[in-house]
Image (cartoon, rainbow, N blue to C red; front, side, top):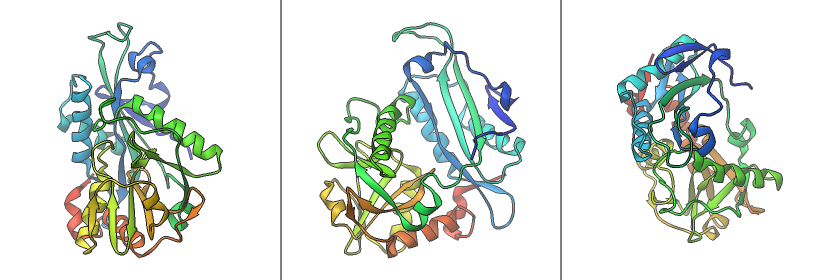
Length: 303
């Protein structure tokens, strides 16, 4: 599955896909300081497309830029419209949306200032991030030897381009060892998240998830917590070690790309087939993003 489309939005105008170029001396390419978002649009039951929790994703993008001292020349409303415009131009009712903010060409060096800030928006057709088989039957995960960033070593609440080197290396390691995904621990040895997903585990009817201290506060994570509570399932945000995963009844990962993906095995210890809690969260989330759940409809921006 490719990432081609007809148009990419670049600094206020739609550009044909093959003409969407970035200069090789762009500052972000060399040093990694830039921010981005991952957003999804889904076909709606009444027809047309709808973007799930678009406002919250845009707000996080703006917040990330602010934390990185990137002065955006566009308002949140303009960025939102850029996403919708790109979807319409590409005639896509279901798509993954990637707004990205980066420093362009100008000065070089770590202390460089005043380089132009660019905003691009691309869309493409992206299926199951961890595979159809993973969504259905669960994935195999390995605890990574790479530690998630310390809370004071980076801006944990910001979705920064350079942060993902840590995740890429962990994912490579897991894949090379025969696993589908990595689970990362923080500097104190507590469970943090996957390489691009938040994590939940269930035991005896209660669900735990790491608190937003040293993890990215996922928009899907927030939705899943709301689903669990509306379903009458207790969910607690608390720190826990990887041993809690080994004895969990159910473990699942959440994210805009991954959606709700069960984990059936961790470090060669069997968790088991996706259970009742995981399946219910999957069911509600999958229906909700397509406009089938009444309380989730206000989170959808149709176009």
